[in-house]
Length: 207
Image (cartoon, rainbow, N blue to C red):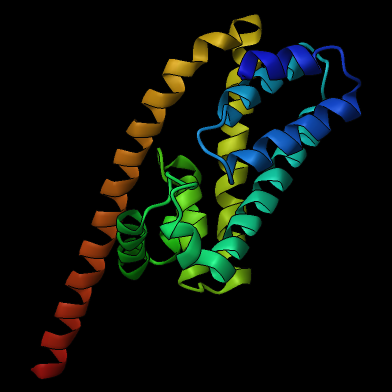
């Protein structure tokens, strides 16, 4: 699929490449697995070769991420239970939704901020955010921050790799899991410190 997309858009004008960037990233939020990450590395390679401007490419990718997340959120909010029970959407299952709901209860907006960096759960997180009816404006701010950071990283990698952009597939998968682990450690440390402060406050109030 990736090679077909790349072959199709090669030679397109700047506006066509930006539109393709938007569409590919948008679809990734709704129909995983989809080669959106590697495509962005390809776009980064085009930026490095002066075919595309960085600001416009980053904007197209981030708007695509925003629109895709918002669409998945809306579907989850309106049709969540029906879709989760449907065999036509195998990547969204009731047990996985329950798992993500527990993450929301425990970590709140941090899960949305980390969304783009979490391997294998992007569509489920945006979909479940709609099911549990998280506040839409705040949720989309968090999602935009996450998308902007992740998209910039991928474009930067492509700019560095240039014509070797195809080599990045394995590294992205490894990087995604490493970042997921690091973020999990940061989140745990954050909540451990907050819990410790609450206990200290209670002790001080009791004494």
